[in-house]
Length: 426
Image (spheres, rainbow, N blue to C red):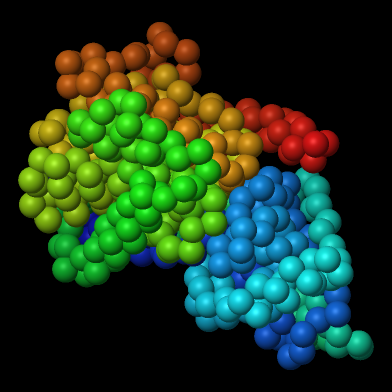
């Protein structure tokens, strides 16, 4: 049954909102973006920067390398780099151009402790407030719920922009996601006119393949992607895992190449897309077949994240691996039921992997999640799936996705707090 015109347009808009380019891990880049915007509003270089962040921002920005900084890490490095070299008009590619002199200046300002970080407690999971001062001049930039969603701008106490938002509803800044369901996602992927999506999908393919190949060629982190090819062989299943892991190896460890994100995450964007691209190219699928599989993988990922939220203690690689698994089943001629069963089988296996921030080991979690998704696919193609007698699995795919989303959103709140506490105690 064809999706309605309204649903079709909503899905189209959701893809445009969620598949966006970013340079570096999105949490430190969001800090750099807000910092660049605050400096632009201030009109001078600040003598003081105060960054107020939710716990999940601190968790994800604390250990990951900030690109184009000579391997600097942390919230302060992100904020100062944004202030020194950022261009907010470039969005999540805000620190695309940083020269050697600027890198030295950032390092010097870090030593001078220009920037202070404060925790925003009991708040939205994605929340950043940047405050800058220069003499009697001041500026403020506030982001909430998504990485570039500016909710408030101030100069010298005067409000320049104020957008209402619901702290409890992390989807309030986005197109209504209640229209998403697996049956309509599949129908949309099979029937959408690719003309207006082709450029975006080509960018996704080119960006994500390029950084994966970089991760396979050079030293980043512990090189999970390279290890998979060296030790597990180079069959298509190993390549699917290796390319996604290698992209994360590079991205988490300072590579300056951009990626196409999904649900605000480069790691999720690569996990949802690279296995699909690798399989399609290996099996000689047409471009259109690959594009449609990528649309399916992306929307399945986004659908799950709608219930979980942008940031949580629930590792996003699980959601993205479900998307890749669904796309694999689709590319191998699977039915709607088999696609649904692939997702169920994957969730029943690995849902609840803990997110302890963005860092090198994300690559290993991606590989493990994809291994589970491939297993889930093979089970589904054999006509079997875990049913409602198994743990949190429900009687329908939509109820199952919502149940596991509830686990990530509500059930793991205390886990999130303890993860951050353990990290900060080191």
